[in-house]
Amino acid sequence: TDQPLVLGIETSCDETGVGVVRGHTLLADAIASSVDEHARFGGVVPEVASRAHLEAMTPTVDRALSEAGVTLADVDAIAVTAGPGLAGALLVGVAAAKAYALGLGKPLYGVNHLTAHVAVDQLEHGPLPKPCVALLVSGGHSSLLLVPDVASDVRPLGATVDDAAGEAFDKVARVLDLGFPGGPYIDRAAREGDPASISFPRGKYEDGTYDFSFSGLKTAVARWVESRERAGDPVPVADVAAAFQEAVVDVLTKKAIAACKDNDASHLLIGGGVAANSRLRALAQERCEAAGIRLRVPRPKLCTDNGAMVAALGAELVGAGLAPSALDLPADSSLPI
Ligand code: KG4
Ligand code: ZN
Image (cartoon, rainbow, N blue to C red; front, side, top):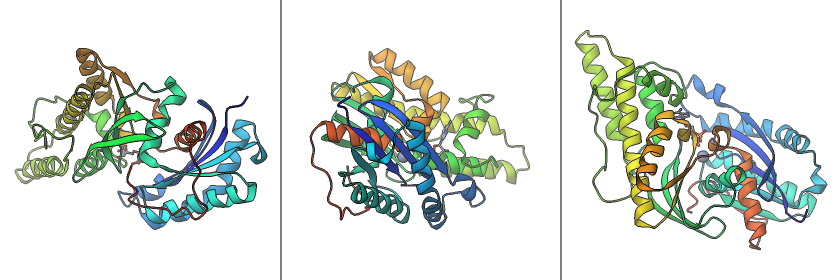
């Protein structure tokens, strides 16, 4: 076919992801994660992540190529996450991508991690309607984006002013003595709880912006649990989990729907690790239906950090005829959209 074959490399956090796509077709999505090495610290340790990327890079590239049934010689372009993310972790991916691009004589495309989270949905649901609104929620970011064109025009509408949504899940899980990463544990515990049993604050709910704030909520949950413990009362873990989760997803979905309405977007896309949350999916579906908006959520493996999303965006850039990056492409931990 004449669609470009793109190899994508993602190392912005704790997953070494290598994906291979042809146009909008996913051929391989290989992942090596260092999440287990971070679990005992209760959060991602940058130095540990960088070293793990270095060790996993070549084997993961090899695995992706063989999964896709192609060789390096077949690759038309190399795409890599240039930022935002952990500086040392990004550097490993960017250096590897440069080496492959230089060695193969193929163009290099440095891409934005958040935009890649949006582009990946095309591998599953086809071309994105223009414009759409994207809600990206993970351990590292919580953003609302307006996407008139994923290759060339992505506009930030708002973002968290403190903790990311996933970070709040992880911290509350810690307060409740659940495991790491905390999101899946809270999700599970909440199914047995009553979200209305405790009223937790919803930061920036009525402030008229598309920004989020989760640190006040996290502190409120911690205080509530502490006061229970101090009084010698049992902590109703399921109820706390359900009430906390409801506060997060209520704000996320309210602002996402408002962004769609205000920008005449007929489709809402949700991505990032927190998109796996069952209550977020259910409430988003319910509120989208009520507002006449179509909801698109990629399957969980494509929502969390992966290489396929980087390859997907790379293929989009090649397809749009955009110029490749220079070979001195920097890794930028706070790369803007
Ligand atoms: O996208 P991701 O794999 O990595 C980055 O942070 O970039 O997202 C991981 C985050 C963690 O904070 C994790 O607790 C959260 O996604 N998460 C969830 C669920 N599954 C993962 N949060 C809520 N509910 C879930 N089911
Ligand atoms: Zn991410």
